[in-house]
Image (cartoon, rainbow, N blue to C red; front, side, top):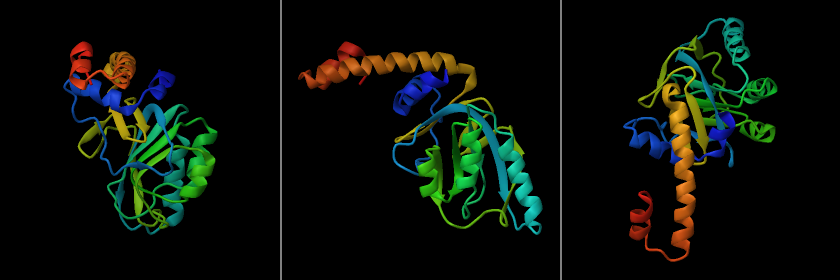
Length: 212
């Protein structure tokens, strides 16, 4: 399933989810890839956190590193940080996750070391970039519990797909059906693309194929 999700584009998935009445499945547009061309697809490993001054840096970093070490291969780490200032992810975190087969990270928060992450080729989507470290200012509070980002609920095991257009969340309970429908939509859109390139008016193409 991961390879099939990775072969799709987020717009096709978003359209299928809309048709099913699931119209709050796209994460806020401020969450962008930290380098051009980054794409990801995998099941969600959810991370929740909260801001707060940390008096013991060693204890704080140990909690974060333990969390990083628990992300399974073929998953996407998804952070709901509740914090709009510091970087919650950097190069060494990316190297660690990549080395264990984790396929990406989505952070409703900050990232740093973006050039090194791009060189590593590890896909990261974040709300902002900053050099400031979060360890003194933020802590992990839970993993593998439901989280919310921009009004979108994300449960452990939901499918996360990201590309240059943004990030879509596919609920795990309908993932197989949505995947198959999105693959069909992509095939139909290929036919429509050929038709309009050949001069077919857009309304005629819509009436013929039922979508546009």
